Length: 124
Image (cartoon, rainbow, N blue to C red; front, side, top):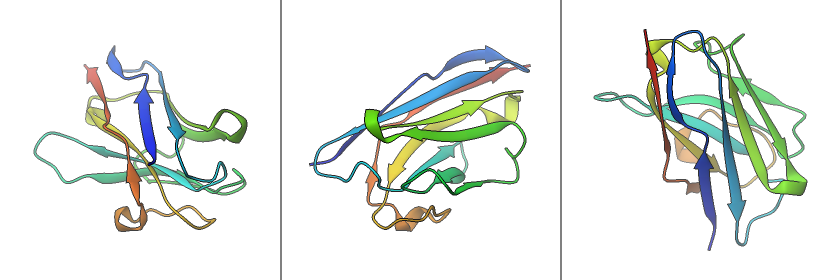
């Protein structure tokens, strides 16, 4: 069984920064590609960022480019999302996801495992 556990969410004022973490456990390779998605109230879940198994390739949604960074530590079985210059529009539940393969993907359907999510609330 594979588990993904997110942490680091919270409430913050616009312009601030948060760092989300996701730790994985269970029968899954340490170098599996990982992604972050988010779902705002009343909206569909959307892609935020993804990273390849080695960390050499990343993919970011246009809405977060220049503000968010995705990184990973395979030694710690963790993936991170550094979020800077946060805006009220970034308010959402953020989900960590893992997929088989080697390359990052922005497609939700390509991810096999999901965490429970962590809430991020940005006030103006």
